[in-house]
Every structure is written in structure tokens, then in C-alpha cells.
Figure: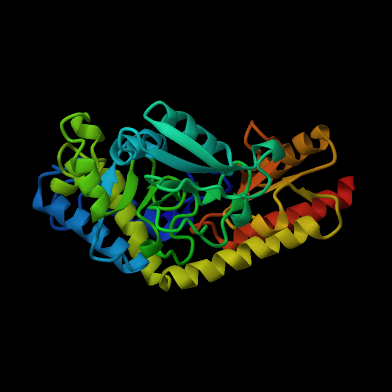
Length: 368
């Protein structure tokens, strides 16, 4: 049975999230046996030439998409962004040095807590007192003179805020958790020293984490080789082309298909323009009458995770129940903030945004 004949509802989940339909169809078509191989992708050895080709192509397509310079390495890891909260300071924070963290959301808060278990951390700025409804301003940053690195979170999945331009951190290496907006538009890799992202929001299925790291930071990690567990050292993955142990084979394969899809869609500028258009439609409806209330500060509104509230919790519960009945799934906001959250990642179709806007208009007519 073709995927196109299967009824699919609109999936607004924050992650694991929607994947491109052509990618799902290709997975379905080749799941029993990869062409010319006679085995499924979930059966083949990670040491096989077939998988090494799949891995190399995913690496090459990431480089093409993001114009990754030659002095950066692309690593494929497990453990999600949450493991990177520990791996970053373990590898990059020398004894006695200090790391600066910009606290703009719940995930940054978790990253700070993990980094403090490893070494000295300074919070350069925080909007926690404002329930993270905005990104810290450049003028609020109090950066250490010789920070080992500065850590930021590019998009706040829970609160619905997103950096529109990178902070100026001087000569300090910039480390960015881009889990929920990776490849949602152009990204200047050169301005980063390390980028990490769990794949399950915008790049593929759960189980894979992509790290893009500048080679000078790999040298810093190498100095900790004798003291760090092998599987927690970036150098292990770089030296072994992410094949030191069994990587998440299926997730790498699926991510590779998503990268190929992104290139076919016109690359990051084209997907960025589409994401801007989708988000603008939804925010226009939120702002139209005041029946809905956006929770993120307007200049910092995320293109990926659109958060809003209604007048009462009872009305919000009714909105969730009725939207689910209409095939609009996953709109309940994160338990930490409540309300609604529509996650409209790269693969989320514009028709789904139109369907939600239509439902919102109808819901307001009936309950406004």
C-alpha cells in the first residue's frame, strides 16, 4: 500500500516530529531490502561498504547544505542534546577555566545545571525571571574575559522563542544547541565553534545527534583523552569517522534522506523562506482579534514552535479536544508552560498551517 493512500493527520508535535512524506515513502519502499543489497537498512552491518557510503553521503550533504568549512568535522552521536549538556564541558572546559552560558530558556537552564557538575560556569545573562518569554539582549550579556566558550540555545522549543541573529561573543568559541531549528534556514557555521542538535525535531528520527565541531576544539578534547571515558570524547568519533561503535544506523540513513530532500527543495534559503511564510500565517491569526494571545515577545517569536494561550484553561482544554477531533494533533503546550504549541518544522506542510488557521477562526466564531 502506498503511503499516499494512508490517512495522515497533521502532526504538530515538538519531537519526535513530522518527517517529509517523500522520505517516509522512500523508507517504506526500501525497508525490506535496500536496492542492490538484499537486506534491510535495519539489518545491515555498520561496517559494511553500503553503510559507509550512506554515512559519507549524509556527511557530504550536511556540508553542502550548510556550507561547512573544511576545518570542521561532522560527527554522528547518540544520547541526544541532553548528553551534549555534559559532553561540551567535559571536552571543552579546562580545569580552572570558566564557561559562559546564556540562559534564555528551559533547555539552557538544564545545560547550565549539567555544566556546573563539570566545572566553573558563569551565567552571562538570563530571562528566567520573565518566564523566558524573550531572548536576552546583546546589551545584557556580561561575558567573562577569557571564557573557554560561550553556550547558547538557538531556539527555545518550550517557550517559543528564537534567535534572529547570533550574539556577539568576541573571540570566545560559540557553542550552540540548535536542536529545534537546525537547517530551518541559512546558518553561518563559521561563526560557531561547535553546533549540536538532536535529530528528532527537524532532521530525522530519534536516536541520533549531529555535532559540527571546529578542529581546534578537537585538539582541546584530545588533551582530555586520558581522563575522559572513551565514548564521551569527541576525538573518539572524529578519529573513527563516527564508527567507533555501532551508530544508530537507521537514524543516520533517514537523516541522509532528509538532507537529500532539503537539497532538492532548494536548500536552506528556500526552506527558510517557506518557514517564514508558514509562521507568519499563524502569528497573523493569533494577533488578529485578541481571542488568542501569543506568549513569546514579538521580536523573538520562533518560526518553529508557535506558543499561545486562550482566556481560560477550560477554553484551552476544549480547543485541544476539538482540534484533535479535526485531525490536528500535538497542540497541547509543554507541561511547564501550558497553553498551546504548534510545532511547524521544515517537513510540516503549509496546508497543515492553513488547516489550523481555519480551525482557529471557526473555534473563535463558536466560543468567542
